[in-house]
Amino acid sequence: MLTSMDKLVALCKVRGFVFPSSEIYGGFAAVYDYGQLGVELANNIKKAWWKAMVQMRGDIVGLDSAIFMHPKIWEASGHVGGFSDPLTECKSCHSRLRVDHLLEEIDILADEKMGEEAINALFAENIKKIVCPKCGKNDFTSVKKFNLLVKSNLGNFTGDLDKEAVYLRGETCQGIYVNFENVLHSSRKRLPFGIAQIGKAFRNEITARQFVFRTREFEQMEMQYFVHPDLEMIEYEKLRAARWQYYLDLGIKEENLQWHKHENLVFYAKEAYDIEYNFPFGFKELEGIHARGNYDLTQHSTFSGQTLDYTDPISGEKFIPHIIESSVGVGRTMLAVLTDAYSEEEVDGETRVVLRLPYQLAPYRVAVLPLSKKENLSFVAQNIAQNLRGSFMVDYDETQSIGKRYRRQDEIGTPFCVTVDFDTLGEGEAALKDTVTVRERDSMKQERIAIADLEEYLSERLK
Ligand code: GAP
Figure 1 (cartoon, rainbow, N blue to C red):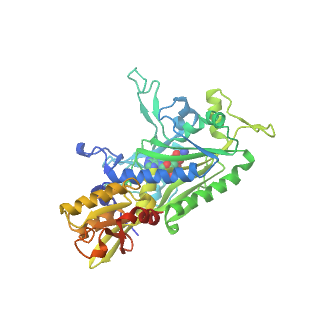
Figure 2: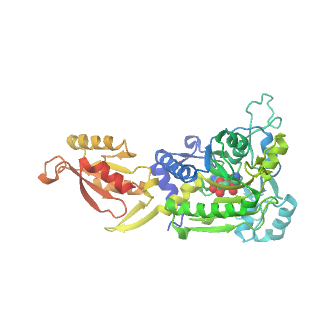
């Protein structure tokens, strides 16, 4: 079990999963770039989510709404008025800190819905026990609630961001709510049905910590399920069960998952649970699953002046649908998947680092490695790699010793390595001509396979 983030952060940088943003300019806080392996892993995560959420469900359809939306949407949703975190500043080192996180460190639960006065009182009550995590001093400013919405000047030529502010979306689901009627009528769906979307969201997080766990630009995978009010809690329990199973199917170890029930709900919510993952810094929220009542459509109906209700085609009953949602970040899923997969073991007196990624998520499914850089070996190996590329993401590597190349593929989680040697060329044992060695990552077992059967063999093993 990985207990420190340092090793994972280093591996992600060195191997090309995740890079700090704008690094040559000294970096840009709380924003990350996904490198050549990170983009493959993220794409595989999104594909798995889309398959479970849309492809395998006749009752859920997809959407890709714009990042920019009418500013009134963020008033209706409550984000302009209430989407804020409690902020304090250390008077000694000037670090800006989240007060709920400082209180959490001393086992006091501060509710994100608390007003400025209430959280100031709680902070003052406990201040003697709190020290700045950066400098260790105990001298803080009073608590201010800081709004997380990110403003832009899109279409605003006044030069004043406070006038006609347009926001980068703080969550993707608002695009789903405002398209409810469009999707309902164009898809001819009946309740219950859902709309799923994957896309970028932006939040001015005060303290962005723990690598890609909390960033200011991130991608969300959200599904909103529209139901009759009487069915809300039944469908909610079904969604909770489906989401738990999804993580098991993704290959996450069940002992690293747990439920966290929200005790203090916003006034409109019926129930809220998080699925937490056992990150190197402890169990923390991976995904939120919420029963939201009819708040969202009611708010958008009031603010837009459009009726957003549903008429049951059989009973004729008219009502505003209730919504249950599933919401999870791509980066946060990636961090959970990488933590779950990371392992170290002793092999021949050396430490072997292996990313035991589920095959379906591995950036490269196959690596083709000629035994040496000799031209005739390279020629055959390049051909094999190119032929396999029609079916899988394939890496090709001919530098350094074969042992080092195996280790490198282990570290990036490649399930199978195909080695081309002199036997393959017919220069060794005659029976091995036109065969290659296939090595499996976890067991390190090797098999000799005919080149003609290779694609079928790998497809079968990678299923
Ligand atoms: N629509 C509901 C919603 O956005 P949330 O709990 O604020 O709820 C849902 O976010 C999920 O989005 C989280 O469980 C997490 O996986 C991801 N997420 C939220 N803020 C994030 C951030 N700053 N960086 C990375 N992922 C984040």
